Length: 517
Ligand code: MCA
Ligand code: AMP
Image 1 (cartoon, rainbow, N blue to C red):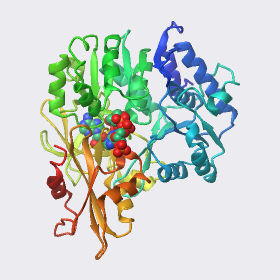
Image 2 (cartoon, rainbow, N blue to C red):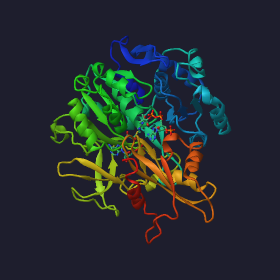
Image 3 (cartoon, rainbow, N blue to C red):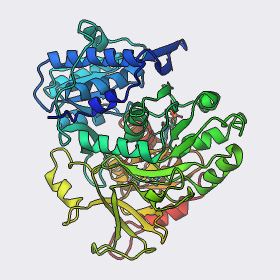
Image 4 (tube, rainbow, N blue to C red):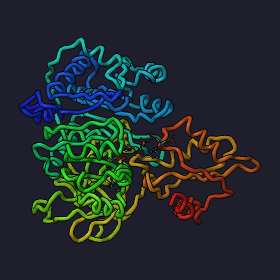
């Protein structure tokens, strides 16, 4: 039986010259670090051997909340290689958030930063996790110390395409976050599709400047480079000047719209500087048409926008080049997310689930080999999010034009996307409503020049109570990841409601839309 472990496919794509440089990175002190393909193979083997030595039950989760480093990526590869399930966690999450994820996923192994070991290990051990390791930004911590005692060869664990490879938590409109279960087959089919669709070539070099705890940085970018045997210029955090400076040595860049906006603010971004770049890809949030055009003017390059989700990885993409296989379309159109990828089915339906004709706006549903297996331990939620004939309901609202281009025009889910991170108003409102003196609250997204959209809270005090907006923000900061904190908080006497009693968030959005203009 062939091994359908995703790691095996990525490993098979390593170049023959294993001593070539695979990753250029820098230590926290700024020293240059180079990793060859052999280094990646050996170091991930050591960690995989170490994980295997723990005799974990089949399907065990390895939950990881660490700063971005090449070693953090090696831990991801090692988890795949050993056949366990990778569960990445945003470094901004605080204790209440981590407590929920660990309690829900029941990981057998937790890896955290050395600085967080005290509180994270307490949560993990209380939830029954047996093994807690640390991994620092500078190749320090107990994970690598332990792995150093193990051999540097490892045969990837036998896995079928349907076996679980990763769980990605994505918040819900109501209730708590749900863990989207992605299989080796989901991830590999998407990576293989994109290698072809985006015309990856020998000699491509990717600038990797995204966080590695979400689909964009972890899967789309890392798989994209590895499955093409391409070198990565690895940046542990996004710095617009550093990315622009690296462009002459690279060919591909991926970013959320905020990264493009920030680079456009740099005078060093010129046509000459971007000359070597073959492809700029944007996604995770809507790219403003102004940004798309300004980028074209400044660099001579047309950003390729694509659309995806944690539950599905990539769904649609603007074309790389004219190709009849992809519908004979030849242009990357700003304001659209392009065509459904090969093998991805996409339809637009009305609220009753009836398919709508071309050009009509409705709910986007999808299916394909990339669509996840369901939400971790939430069969009910999983059923709700699929149509009776098996299509996944994205919660995005859009249309498909006569040439087949998909545009996202809104969302049926109450979601704010801020700088590429998702913020679910229901979660934040829940915390605000618990605060002393608060009767109720509403969080809405308003346009923001840097983050695209940011949250603004409106709070209604209980009769006779006094509530201070700044105190609400300060109270949230101690409990929630920083990107979820509303940028402003207003106190009002009532929330606008329709005749059904539902809060009219559109009116609030309208009222505050000019706040950051
Ligand atoms: C940071 N801050 C934010 C955000 N990031 N506020 C709102 N939204 C944000 N995204 C705030 C912090 O709370 C802090 O505020 C201040 O900005 C500085 O924080 P710092 O961490 O220094 O910010 P930064 O380093 O400048 O980060 C901005 C960033 C980052 C580089 C744009 O947010 C980022 O890397 N975003 C990419 C997210 C991503 O990879 N998404 C992909 C999801 P204070 O000082 O008040 O505390 S994958 C996905 O969506 C799908 C599947 C897809 O299609 O790809
Ligand atoms: P996540 O829950 O992080 O997986 O976010 C997925 C959501 O991000 C999608 O359902 C869309 O609402 C949004 N998204 C991703 N890419 C784009 C894009 N190019 N344009 C508009 N929205 C996008």
